[in-house]
Picture 1 (cartoon, rainbow, N blue to C red):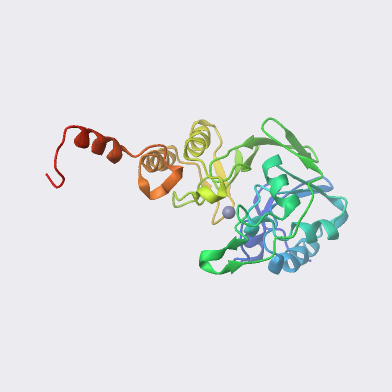
Picture 2 (cartoon, rainbow, N blue to C red):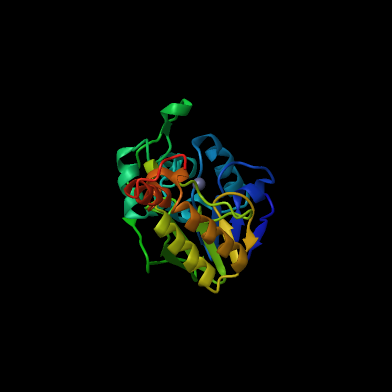
Length: 262
Ligand SMILES: [Zn+2]
């Protein structure tokens, strides 16, 4: 038996429970006899996570949901095996993630980054149910409101419970955001909308998918939004940028016949 180290009432985070870094944040939310898992991480760490759950005395048969916050391999590689271990648990996530995981898609999930020699298994898994903005997941008497917060990925979901937001890859404690990458389906205007929604919400705490939990800070969110707004107009982010003012300037200079260099 291992003492449950709740980060908030009814919430356990498996890296914190283990007191070492296993991978992405894996949240266990429980009430009464029911519990759910939000993301599950890589297959390599699944046995450790299952062992911790057993040692905390959560019956595996009482796991109600296995949630995919989105389809990135570091969040969901072990989902298929977890479902085999807990067949009664409903695998849920956004339909965009369901599509990728049903086919074992490899590019948008980051299982395959050929240029960096990354190529790892991405086991196919069928979702039992897709969830989207406005849905509510219940575990015991707790209610988790589903927020669709695209930007990092089209499928990115967040979950609000009381004054907590399980915020996925939207923002981390240092103000960094989830990877912005055209091949991943990232979208800067959507990302800014999602961050603005989080900024304007009355949630107090952000429980991200990577790194420590932190207090929501409007100013930090604003700085991050401003940074992403700059990215929208910078070539640095390739086709994720919405425009590139330099080329407009150049059009004018060319039309005026200005030599370059001036
Ligand atoms: Zn992530």
